[in-house]
Length: 144
Image (cartoon, rainbow, N blue to C red; front, side, top):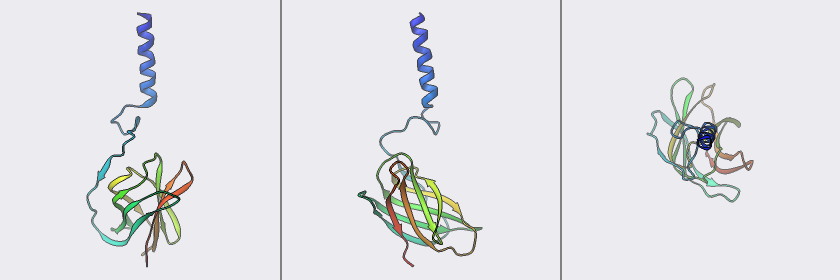
């Protein structure tokens, strides 16, 4: 019986350490989830295709929608990126980095809301950045 209690305690400690799957934290699948967020409302102010960087492949579009009150939505449309934990999206507007935003999935279509002060910012690019390898994996350059 003592052996059984020890195993139960160990299991409980491991479960508390890893978290509970399905609660937004804890164990992550090695296979990415394909997201399909709805198309946001607003006016498209910038759009560009992703290209791979530093030996990585990437596909899909970065689309920025202007909404009211300095609110914007970055929509990743039909993306396929390298699957790695901790990838970040960096939006460059007026030659200044905005964010970072944590990438939710390396596949599919997904929306990210962000805010900028000032009238009519110029969007330069969106970068997919690896915090593990300290380099960009993909870039979408907006043409003006």
